Length: 310
Image 1: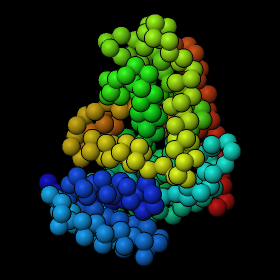
Image 2 (image 1 turned 180 degrees about the horizontal axis):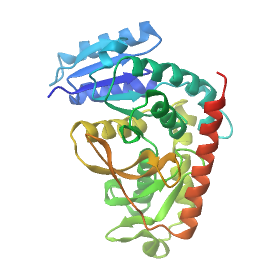
Image 3 (image 1 turned 90 degrees about the vertical axis):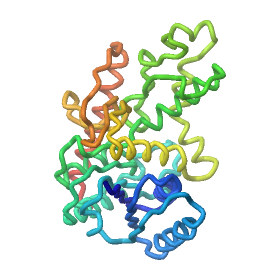
């Protein structure tokens, strides 16, 4: 079976996603789309120049929405990262730009006859994922956002550093908005076969500090180089591969939760049919309150986007 992936938006993140896919041979066909024709053509040529030295071949198509019709997955990586250069470290600073761009792109995706899965990276990702689903009319379980898959990885890195472990040895989730209202659900975090909350005192861990480090990880990277790309691109490709390979992996991604009436990050099992099952965590009262606050915030911003006259 041929694996076909589209990447829309070839900035720092989109080009990193595309490079990872090409270098690792994750797709047979790759469709690259960007408004900057010179840039996307240059990237395509650069990838083709790399292929003689790679163990895989990828067929590349540039700026052709009709080529998305039979794609398995489309990754939305469009954005304007410069807008995030604000003192509040607020991903919603991009919304006036991205909601307008996404409304155009989603319409073109719909017109192409695309019937696969969408993975959104574009910020603010929970609101943008909602917009893609509404405009394309695709089933809710076929439209996902990377959400806190990245923030959970940042939390694992922070915890693992303190305990001198590989981050893959830490289990647990950050939940809610991929943004300032997200939080680490410490009741879900386990390490060395035990709840982290049990180890925290013995090991001198400050959970509040670790939560902040996970939340602000993107901002720290952004301050250093004025964009982030490797962490989020890796999260996106992991999600794409879970769909392509039907791996049925449980991941904290932005998915539509009926009880909150909105897209937010909560663990879900992802496979070829998108979200195939949703987890039900046993959260504490405090965590449930934080999740509700996050859901309300996303919902408010989504409604604003629907009413905006862009």
